[in-house]
Length: 192
Image 1 (spheres, rainbow, N blue to C red):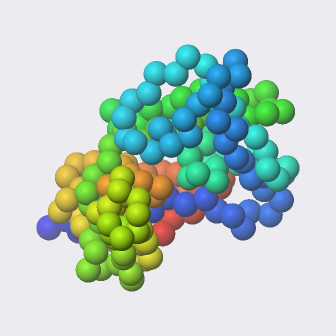
Image 2: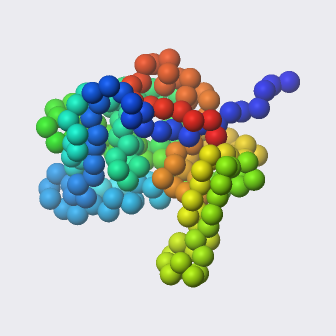
């Protein structure tokens, strides 16, 4: 009998000494506006230019970083690793430009949004309501603390964003172990 699959929320490891901090500039390398929220929708994107990312705090570049809007930015090392893991149908790597850097960077676009949060196992959840005055958010999560997923809802998905709380990225233990084994710098994992 095999043990149940374990899932992890993929975070930005903020306590890496001397690390950089990135932010989204909401434009591409041709000066055109780029919708910063499109990277959380779980759909393939076809952009004309490369999104530009700024450095809010200079420091050591990381293999994995999250911008202030939870957009994951990765190096070619992460791209290669995910290709080795055969995750091509679950992710898209969008070439991006980090100001002042010559190395290639990519936005990791997670291509699936799954209704997978297990409210009963989370520390705390709250939903947006009509009285909050933001109709487009009604029924979505306003707060999730101690995020836990329901493995039965995950199916055979290796990486996804949870429906209603798309700032989070959920990965399988297989991806976590591969990232740790490859020495990917900047990633932090919280069991979900």
